Amino acid sequence: MKNILAVNFFAMLMMPTAWAQQATDLTVPKLAGNEIKARVGKKIATPDLTTDAAAMAAAQAHARKVNVFNRTMRPLASYNLSPLEDDIHDHSNESVQALKKPRDSYKNLPRNKTGNLVDWVAALASGKISPLWNHIDATAEGMVMDMDILRVTKGTINNVVFPHKQHTEWLVCSNCHPAIFVPQKGANKISMALILSGQKCGVCHGRVAFPPSECGKCHSRKKDVS
Amino acid sequence: MSEKQKGRAAGYALPSVLIFALLLIGSHHARAEYGDIVINNYSDAAEMSPVIFPHWLHRMRYACKVCHADLGFKLKAGSSEINMAKIMDGQFCGACHNGTIAWNVENCSMCHSAKRGTPTQVHEGKVQEFSAPTGGENQ
Image (cartoon, rainbow over all chains, first blue to last red; front, top):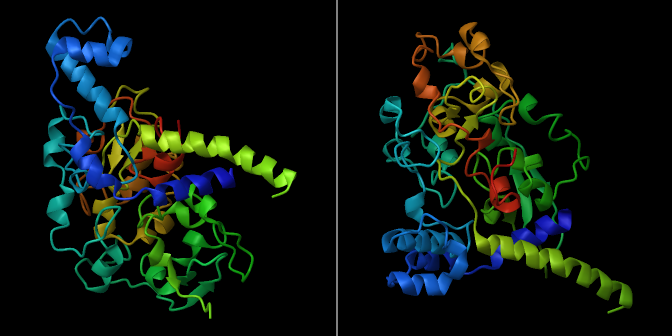
């Protein structure tokens, strides 16, 4: 399992300039109905396809599906969709129109490359957002602990620096210790395979905090290789 | 390369190719805001739309710790066993969505806003992208 995930991750990394291509390749050239049928053969010949228009739509949908080159790298336009445009909200529900839209809320926040496209840590540090520490007492403040943990990596990739400071600005000790990370030096086996399958750092990173595809944010300390 | 190493390399080759192919084929990928959580433990069975929790909106206003330590929301999507009785009793969502801190639970369809049949999962998460190309991590 570990090996499979590792290979998977590197396959993702090795795909160059994928989404520039993806953005342009999504449409198929316009073809006559019979030409489409000849090209895609029996696969789309379902009973629905009685007209050329239906055949065209089906062929385009098929092409859109199979020609997504790298689904982990999407066009920017597909991020931060409003509840009215996304795929999960029931658009016939009138209340959906009243829901807040991510793009409106993110307007003045520092940008990031993936996830919500918002650098949440920078947003907090610059005071652009000021999330409350307690839902009843708005004046409550947390205890921030400034202690970096250095994790030496295998191979040549930069070592990992884990900053307690940025984490304790959002979380308390019991969120991570001892269930996810044993608070003891050397007691935690962490690997990218575990993280990418949603364990260890991956409990949050890849689900709500910045995704693990931003290697350099964690792998930030250069190794001495002289 | 020894015979043993060759055998091992061949053993990795097939899964690697398969995974590469899966990456190329693309997925049935429901577009949503990163971190949006759909909770559908009881909704479909009760003929309600499943709940969408907009993580991004809540994290702008409250530290993670408020919900995940003080209010008892577990870190795994769908595992907190939230139901309307608990919410009306002031637990979970009901700690704020009570008409004093945030709008109250009479606005059913503000939360129960997902398409029917949407599975419980974190949307746009890396786990789905990498290891479950046919749907959610909980399927």
